[in-house]
Image (cartoon, rainbow, N blue to C red; front, side, top):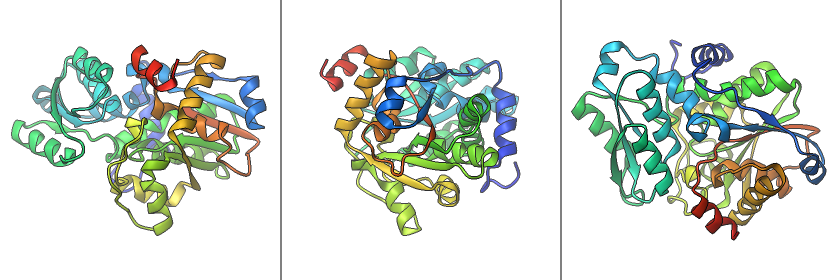
Length: 322
């Protein structure tokens, strides 16, 4: 991958070979009730069953595994609200390295504890006043660490695309793929893989109504910054799309749908009660867009990526009102 401004289907396929046997090949589930409510055949790619409980391990391991032995000996740095933090921490452990993670002070306790459990050192900051990129870059420079960002990295994006690669390999033709959007890495990788295999497929992103930076940016034709969103979907609380991810998404993403927090709560309840799936708010947003009829016209065969399931029992109960 010599041109870091482009990620290709071949890059995603190379990532799939690299993570094979390390990352899980997650299941694709069906629900007749879901099909009936949506009015389509829906194929749910369950990344909540991925290692660390989210798709992020795919990209983190693909990127970390390409570091030199000398760099692995020095260690890896990352900044993340939770899932990428755990992914980098686990990837570092798998590769015999160490990790230092910059995390918001208000990161859910379960995600912080899991990150520490993988052996990472945690440095906290205030997400509403601090600049995590600047903090992470300064920390990496000071300690000589390799910095793996959560989405602004071609190997991370290629790794995330392997979920869609597996989905298409398993279910065949799809009319649309619906994907949660935070910084844009998952949908950039998904769009690269899905459209590389199925050129006519619609790639639809889903953002919280309070965090519509990617939708605004695509409509404006340039990256648009918004105030840091306040939403239950903490993994989607981005204020501006990544430069690299936006350059990919503006070419390949067809549309962005928005969902409210209440729709996300309903989707979490539905997944738990009818599909026996525990999904975190960010992981449920794409499913919420389907259940809340935010996508029209309704495609006939739809792949939907449930991006993660990292949530404590207490937080799940608090959000869903159980």
